[in-house]
Image (cartoon, rainbow, N blue to C red):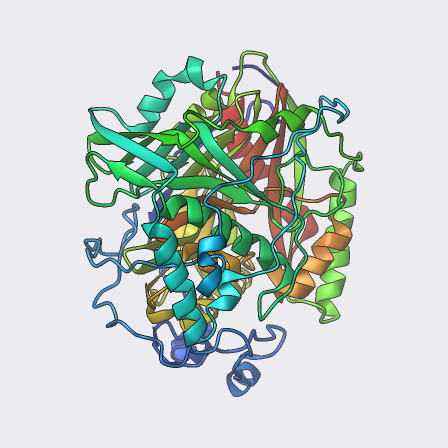
Length: 612
């Protein structure tokens, strides 16, 4: 595989895949007992805490505990018994027990409109719009946008009566004859990736989708029955902020299609049924220039799906629509038709100056953390395609979340992320805090670097910010919530990270996109407090992030699904590739070292892209 590499990038060595070793992260503060503000277990009914000011001392934070106005306990909400154990995620974690996945399944309902309007909803998706009058550009990946609805399924479920109406509407829609049907067959001895790779010639001309989790679940898709977009939807209603409207829009539109789907054939344990796969941009893009990306959200129902879960057997399902055949991905044609405004280059000097300005903001108390991202552009060998790059990423990052969305015309977004945003399956919630970074190159004393990271006051503080956000956000949605006392040290090519897995038992009626909407963006990719950090990012970064650091994943008609954070990623447009990386800036950050951190993050992806 050939690649034209910017100066200073040749000769980068490749590290091994991700592994996790449990190095007890220790500090003097921990010798005096547990920190109450990081209490790891929450039982149903406990009131959530407000987002703390991390510029305060620990003693001040302990005294200032309040209940935020959002996400109150639902009156009369039915509860399930707390989980009796913590689930492992199947990754190579020393010190965590692997616990069998519970077979209890809680079906989540999230409808669009409710009550008497349920029958008025059409079980159909609006195809992506294509305009023949758009101007051709070889450097753009922009899509058109469509208007957002003015209703929010999340908001509708905030009272018990509205929740019952919403669930009743969902059941009524699900009972109607489906316009999507599927038939499955078993494929022995081949993984979903093997099946996708065997269709490489066919996949080169059709949309392609891939999702692989470290614990073994994998979904590959070829072709698209239907595609649904969410536009620049700045609607704030009943506790859902403007940015959350796109999550509710996708949940309502795609949910109607998936719930109405019918299926016959083998359906082994864990089989998700009809699924949609796609992603969201980091933030609503509006008129921000310069990122060659997708719309605010886009999800697709693959026509041919290969699913597997830690076994030698794969289930292939061929889905058809009532119209007979694939609806296609018509909006993909606009990749080559819409030209975004140019964005100024963000070279080393400008980026380091932006870090210094960010540190000034932190010292002034505007925020306690802000994540700044940057990118580089490469020119690839003409023979290089997304499937080939993904094959290299899978080899280099076997324990990361691998994702790929390709339109069949040479345009794609793909990556290998170390961070799960949210998973909901059988009533169990999974997420993880990944924050705190240390360089670790081949030949260096890895164990010494792991110990140094585990004891680093700066990195532990950054990690606590992320973990606190996850715990406080999930408490209102869970009957129980658990996390280990100390973070683990995760090893990736060129880097070490602090990681803490979080597990919980979801309350009845949970939906994976509700989790995504509440958790995204985490302080690991935006900063803290989130509102101030996002405003600063919008002000200082020269162009929008597009789908970089956005939620990427899949969902089914039961509201289950799995999403990762779209970092360690790249966008493809023909022979052009744009690679992304970011660094969290906190008090004590060194601008030069933060630049070096982004270089190391890019190096791991660059090694895969440039691999022969």
